[in-house]
Image (cartoon, rainbow, N blue to C red; front, side):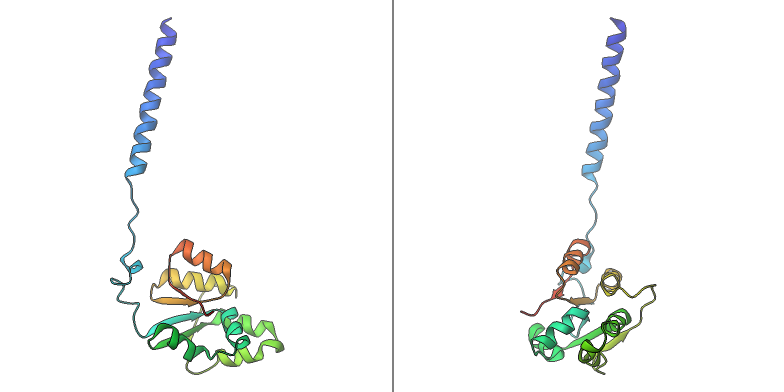
Length: 161
């Protein structure tokens, strides 16, 4: 009989400790960076720096949209389109079929951003860059990339329809 009472006391202590741990976990709140809110993010303002993805360039060519003018019409402010080295490498890999997209990306109005990481996967490069610097709007038509950006950073992205 004494043995079962001791077990009950141990179980009650374990339950109290589990509840205390649960209570501590509920009290911790991750701080949201002020750059997430448009009124506090002084970096994100005209002229807007827009990171352009490979499929966004292809989409604009397919629908006969001028990228620079369309971005300015959409955001109603001056835009600085930015193309990373990974996007350029991806366009070069696509070959002869996408030579017009490559020529468009080499436009002198587009700012060229160097990459310091290994590999040439453009989606990871854009995701990493917009996580590090909160002053970019990402222009993409890729559903998977949009989902990752929303999930990780809840950032701004530009879509033409």
